[in-house]
Image (cartoon, rainbow, N blue to C red; front, top):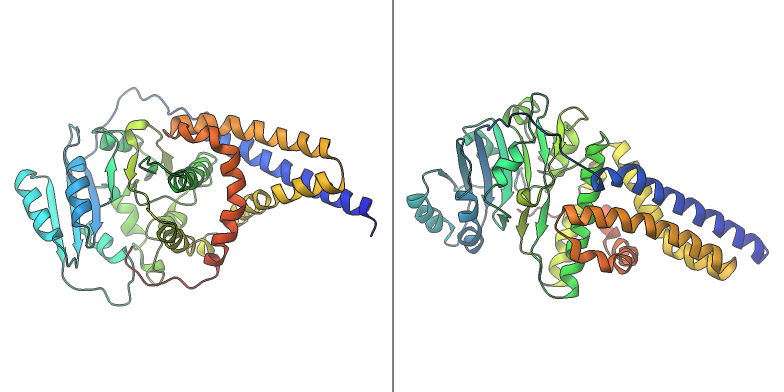
Length: 373
């Protein structure tokens, strides 16, 4: 086949990839960029049960749990801390905190759940022990960004809403790894929050997630996904979330932050474990997510191919269109999510995603390991 024919094929594919990427940013992701919560004439404060499961996380509990226990919330709330077979000093730290904070309810698990891997069993026990209908989930390594976290998260509920999706961010640290971790976290949140705003909710993150206790038991908890090590957050939400029952909250005071992984190996293992659940999403979600990932992955190779085999000027024009739209949406969204320091790097971070998908592609077909976290 002549080079001119190859050039036209590559150009056609590049135009298609650019058009699809621009569509996602204008149709889906712009919803988050321009999101404004509805103004409520009256804010109802529901009693809330915050649930935190921990295994061998004594340092995290000592560091972060007080930030949950000192929330400024006028209505009733409790903190259910499920200590799942810890071998460290978690039990004694929780006992000391309970002396000071009467709202802390400690649940000690001393037996492993057979045939149920991951965090689903301790989380199910925590939900069963919760006194209130509104559940607010986070992790032991997370701390609320403000003392108004509970207030902001529960304020998204109304008569129809049963699920509230929040943003679980990571602390800012020096170094390139921190930027990559935080950008990937922002990029994931940009997708699941925007899809929810478009009426297609597909996941949430257990670092900052709320739903009704009745919804959990009405759907028989995690019974349909107990055989999958992960998925206590995203797969459960993928199963029960609808256009009508899901809301999001994006507010600087409603964010939780946790300590990011410190090494490339730790981060790779964490993300590989997370991605093993994607194959269990509903078909429409897999299609929408797969199309976006495929065109994002192919974009820069097609850009290079268009320069080499067709016309560099046309290649730069299409690149400019995509980056202008993307940069505008990223700026508005990063500002809302307290990640604005990443914006000057967004072009390099976008190019990095090509290599990111190569590194983590194997997680989509590998059998997940049966680990707790």
